[in-house]
Image (cartoon, rainbow, N blue to C red):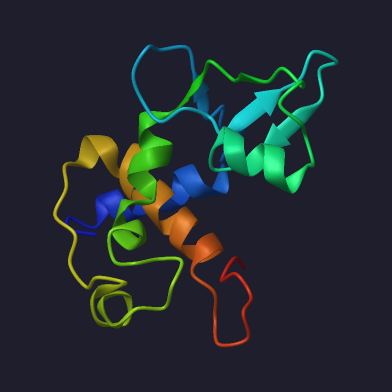
Length: 134
């Protein structure tokens, strides 16, 4: 981090991290991939067809997708690797991720930079297939 004071700010935020509500009640954004039946059971999948197939739900079961969307910073935090072919271990992912330089304003270090680091540490596995989370 340049200047150095922002490195201290970043680590201070990370030491005192709070829970993060990743859902928002907006009309735009990435919809939360959860569906509910009339009994309140929750099913998660990429789309309704996948939910029905993986859970053996017939056409007679009424499903309703969660109306909330993902927080913008959650979606943005996935950008560094999702644009490079993840979850596959592509040549582009190996060559360009992680990056060695990130230019950003100090005002979004916590909202974007820290969350990109967190997502990378969780979703990009080490050579043993484990998350890099300490």
